[in-house]
Amino acid sequence: MPKKSIRFVDIKKKLNKEKLDRMNRGVAKKITCQVSKGMHDIIFDERKIFDKVMSEINNIGNFYGYEKIVPPIVEYADLFSHGLGKDSLTLKEMFSVKSIGDKNLVLRPEGAITMIRAYLEHNLAAFSQPVKVFYSGSYFKDKEEGNKEFYQAGFEIIGDDNTINDIEMIFLARTILSNVGIHNSTVELNSVGCPKCFKNYEKMLEKYYKEKSKKLCSVCKNNLKSNPLALFSCEDEKCKALRVDAPRITDFICVDCKGHLQTILRYLKDMKIPAEINPEISVDTNYYTRTIWRVVAEANNESKDKVVFAWGGRQDELIRLFSGQNKPVSGFVFDTDRLISFLRSQRIIDTKYRPPAFFLMPVGETAKRKSFEILEELRRNDIKVAFSFGKDSVRSQMKIADKIKARYILLFGQEEVGREEVILQETSSDLQENVSMNRLVKVLKNKIEKLNTIN
Image (cartoon, rainbow, N blue to C red; front, top):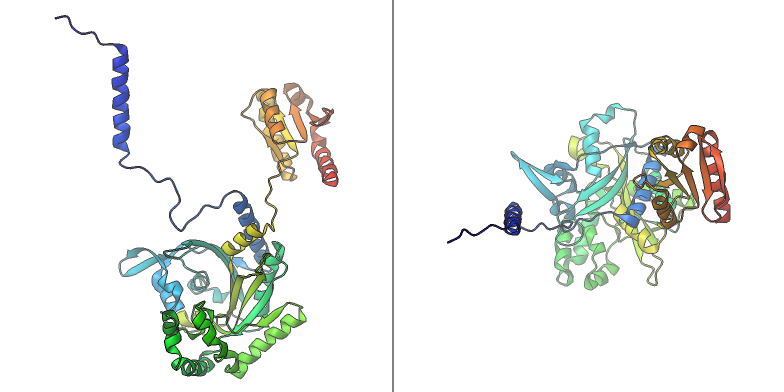
C-alpha cells in the first residue's frame, strides 16, 4: 500500500492547534478585566475636576504655611482603635490587610490620627509651635455597599489653644470651596462640650429617652449608651420625631465651652461669613471637644439639598490619647470625593476639551530632531501645541491638524531648520509668514491674545 503523503496545510493546522493548546494551558481561568468592587478609576472629566480640587488644596496649604505630610497607606490597626473609640463606626469598617506577629495592619481609614502619629513619632514638638500640617490622598473602609476607597484632605494646627485657629480652619475650608466655584457655602456649628459638662448632658439625654426607648430604632438604642450625639443624625422617621423635644447639648455646656462657641460665632459675624447653630451636628469619634462645625452648600436643584463638604473642630483629646500630653489641636476634614461629584453634577467647572491653537509639523528627520528643542521652549513659555511626530508625510499630519481644528500650523523642514525659522500658516485662510526662531514665542503669544479677544 503506497505511503500517504503529508500535505503542508495539515502541518500548519497541527502547529496552530499545538500553539492554541499551549495558550489555553497558560490561562487557567478567564481574567476579570474590571476594577474591584467599591473602587473606581478617575478618568476624563472627573480627573480634570479632581486635579483642580487637589491643586487648590495644595495651593491653599502652601500659601498659608502648612507643611504637607504624606503618611503610608498601611498603618497599625491599634492606632485607630485607640484613637477613634470602641463604638466608632469608622473603627468597625476598617480595611484589614495583614497581620505581623500580634500586630494587625489596616488600610488607613482617616487622616487626623495619622497626622498626630507623625507629630509624635518625628518629635515635631521640637519645632516652632504651633505646627501646621495638611494631607490628602486615598482612604479606605471595608463596607458592603458604597465606595471602599475614598479621597479626603485635611488640615491640622497643633500646639496652640487660641480660638483664632478654629476660625482659620473654617476660613480655609470656605476658601477652597470658593476657589473651585462654590460661593454659597454656610457654616453650621454645635458643641460636644468637654469631658466634664458632657457627662451632665448624657444623664439628661438618657433620662429623656428612658421612657421612649421602645420607639427608638436598634441603632439609636445602642448609640444612646455609646455615642448619644449620633441620635441627632438618625434618618429613621420615628427617631426624628422623638428628638424634636430632646435636650440640646448647648443648654448644658460649661462656661468655657459656651464661651468658645460664642467667640467663634462673633468672629464669623464680623467676617460676614454666614453661620448658624445646628444642634443636630454630631461626630463619630471620641477625640473632639468643645465646638464642632461643618461647611455646607445648597445644590442647584428643586429640592435645594444641603451637601456637607467639610467638617471639623477642636481635637484636643488626640495627643492626650497617645502621649498623655495636654496639647491643643484644631483641624478639619475635606470630603474631596463628595466635592468632585457635586462639581461634576452641577457642572460648575468647565471640563470641555479645548485643543491647542498651534500644530507643530516637522518634515524630515532633521526637523523632527529640532522639534524637541522648539517644544521645550514653548513649554517654558506656557504655549500649548499639538503634534504627531509618528506621522511622516505632510498630508497625514494635516489630517490630524484638521481633526483637532488647529488655528495655526508651524511647518518646517530641513531648509527652514537651516535658516532658523518656521512657516506659520493660518488654517482658515492659508495665509503664511516666515518667523525666525528667536521671534517665535513673541509672535505666538500675540496670536493667542488675538484669539482670546475674538473668543
